[in-house]
Image (cartoon, rainbow, N blue to C red; front, top):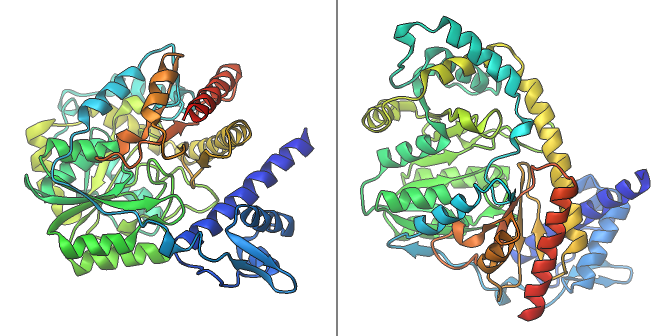
Length: 478
């Protein structure tokens, strides 16, 4: 058993390295004819073993991306995979966004209790500390006074101080006065967008994007500029520069870490260039950072808010503590009063008992221990699903695990429609999130997102097996 597990780990590592190198070639980091770093140099840079690096290079060679040259190492293959011959993802400008009806239908179908919910946006609820939260809620309920039953914006002072202390622990200066408590991160994001825009304004989002951003743009009658992102490098900053230069953009709604649905995180240099571009064009940034605690590795990545205090940083506890809490926040800086006024006119306030219960739980210092366990379990589960899918699916299907979180992004052959797969799977009690949910256009119709936070058991194993059978049948019928 140990040997088999070790082989699976090595397999996933060399495929991951191969994808990274392939992405660099696609993005023009390595040009046709360029000599790649030697095996030993790559071992040193990547931290992988010599065998893992060699397997990755051999895989790329077998796929025609690189050529092995005797006594000279490896070079990028000419012509066929050159960036000049690859279609660069186009900036998609949508005067009107019309996605809400489709998204509503998909989300409603995912509520069926008999379904294996691979299409869900939320992690497995059994991973949350439900008993500890219940005790906190019980303590709050026993001592709740009449004047605590309604807490107007900006929200419970104890909770805002607790969140400010978590920022401070990461070296960030955020005062409780800058923080507005909201009903989940989605309200924080929507209020931030509404504060910055008026109907008819242009807003930059990623492509693919979190469907909540597209719904907000549709609801507020805004125009979407969808800047392409890929699973290797994240947001295309050249395309962003083009968008900012050509359109009067009023706001950007982006995810720098563990982007939904791709799972990609921006590198250090990309983060700096992104902020520089936005400063140059005086465009405010709304940072959707709901997966901030679900990172891979030992160190938590800093949000963009750490480099620019003008960023509206939005997050929540829905992905780490309990979906039903619906407690989020925005660190809004000088725009906090504007956010509060809008909230007062819309939802009035966020549940006072829930805010107090969450503040009580955070004071117990159990949260960080819970997060360490949660990250470890999610990483293990994602790895198990990833390995199974790589074994079961045909070579024409690409599976991207991303960095952190609990989603996998799958790309079918471009001639296929994942919405058809969605309907076939739903008929068999399996949900997926088809690519049409994540774009105003059809460019991701062949893709879909899988939630792999569920436990690997006979039910989920059977569902993965059945999904692979459906995919193979669709491919053979193309």
